[in-house]
Length: 418
Image 1: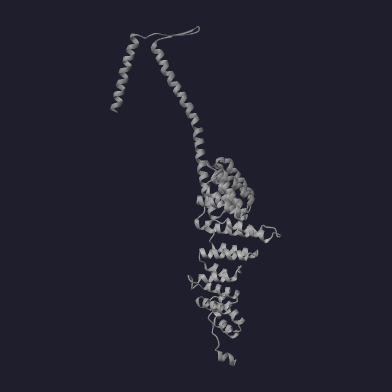
Image 2: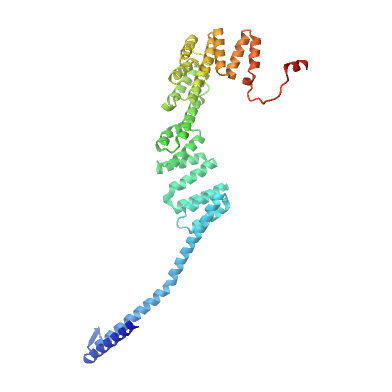
């Protein structure tokens, strides 16, 4: 209140002072333009100027206030679209997670039309359409995603590749992934998808070429990478002969098989399963002497019971030498049941019957396996020991048929009386 009183006093004093100035000297202003002149006092001119400024300010305020509702309405509409888009996107993603594909596609598709970033909505809606089996709608939604966000070609392409792979459209999927590899050569997910497509196409040569990149980029876990390597080179071994014409001679087959074997990486050259398959393929083309040599060298490098067992099933070029080689292993592996079984078999090939029987009995004493029991029983029968062979089988019935249930059995005397 005090400030207002002081302000009024200042205004009155200023007014009195200005009024005094107007009485003493009204001033003179002349404005001439072409043939028109305007004459007035300085104070009148000042009043006109002040009134003109106030009028212009008033008109500007009216114009601004008239435009404000349009801007306010536009802002309200934008906020509403944003809120509606968020709400529908949330509902669509929840429906997608719950497996409600129809609702998910509808909500996400509607939200995309209002969204500032429609890419996510279109991609998720395409997945929902795919889950319903609506291929046409899925493809249309993916195309809308491309148009809405051209710079997201990799993201759209990956989603499309996933859908194509799930549909079984392997060739289009492969073309799509090869295009993506050029756009994003270091994308590990593209590599994994490419690996899956090649596996479905049975293109093991392509996977073999991709393996170094998968290993370098760590796109696949170590355990899965090792399994993939084994599977790849196992199939390369198998297919090496399958792709040859029927009339191909064994020498040519042998050459092709060796080429496939030489392609094995160093870390797989000692894999028992691969060695076994290589040996089996060598035997299939009548190359048992080569198989015996390979197997002998592998066992010398790394002892493996399975491969030692296989060594006794192969007919080498020199049977006596083969037996002697195996007998040399007994010093370091005296308790190996597979080695003793192999020695028994090689002794049979060299027609040393008593020695074979001794090896079979030693092997069976260490490990009562069906395989050794069968060999021992067969040899006894051929040696004329039929009763002994029968008793052996009777005493080891559990070995022949294991996992028999515990059941009551009649006594021998009762069985005879019956």
